[in-house]
Amino acid sequence: MPDYFYSLVDSTPILLKQLTVCSFEVISESEKINGRSISEYIRDYLTLDIDINRLFPSGFSEHYPELWKLLSGYFSLRILRQDFFETLITFMCAQGIGMHLIRKQVTMLCHTFGEKRSILFNGKSITLYSFPTPLSLAEADIVMLSRCTNNNRIRATNISRAARSFMDGALDPELLRNPHLPLPELRSMLCRNPGIGYKIADCIALFGLGRFDAFPVDTHVKQYLAYWFHSSNALKPLSPVRYLELDCEARTILNPDMAGYAGHLLFHCWRREIKKLRTF
DNA sequence: GTCCAGGTCGTCG
DNA sequence: CGACGACATGGA
Image (tube, rainbow, N blue to C red; front, side, top):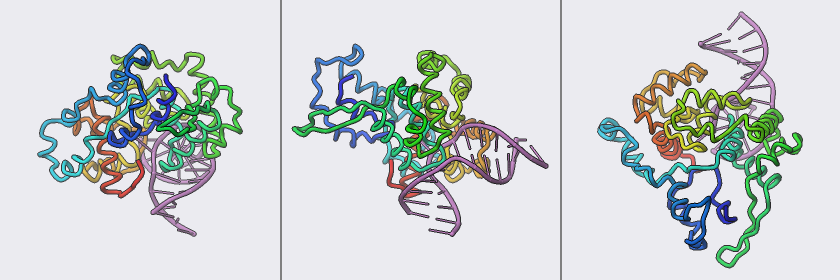
């Protein structure tokens, strides 16, 4: 993968219009990434094959007219087909803390364990750090690693262990990428790794394995299920059984095989329009 | 100072 | 199963 692509790999959703800021002019069409042309790669990465208009079931806009009005401002939001390992580690950093701290952890991981790369962009030299390789995290000293994980030693240990599982093949993305693998089975395979529960597993499936049917239920999703869709279950504290119930409820409201993708638009719409949060 | 952040896990009744 | 605390920090 060419160096400049690392500037795109952020493990966070990006609005299409923001992404254009990255300017693809620097990329030559003759260059290949994993045997594919640049335009093919971008189309896949930005999930341009996914038709946003078919994300929500027919009748949804009529059933939720006010919500639909808010949501229409989010149709340019794309889920990215991101690297499995990056997604795995990034979401293992996302437990009960704010987006700001999650980004900080990922940034520190890159600065501490990633490769330094300087690229020329619009005539200026920019220094970037790649995401750490599985090997570098597998071999990382736990104390140094926990400095990157919000000083959370347990999280650092879990990440270290996950990296080693990735290295020895126990955690194999090619095995998990099987589209015929039922979601509950995929989820339980991911949950064998300490530090990964239902929510993180669903995030890894959704963002790192292209499983757009996976529907992660977090604190925000729980809130909008109660507020927009009047789920009484969503008002109660989240437990493993209730997680599965909410997951099931969401599939009756949304298109089951695209529930996660649709849910992601709802997620950002909720955060910005209702909660008035500015962070993506 | 209090509450809440893209949770998970162990323990106790 | 449900409730609660530990893990950790920072922004509102």
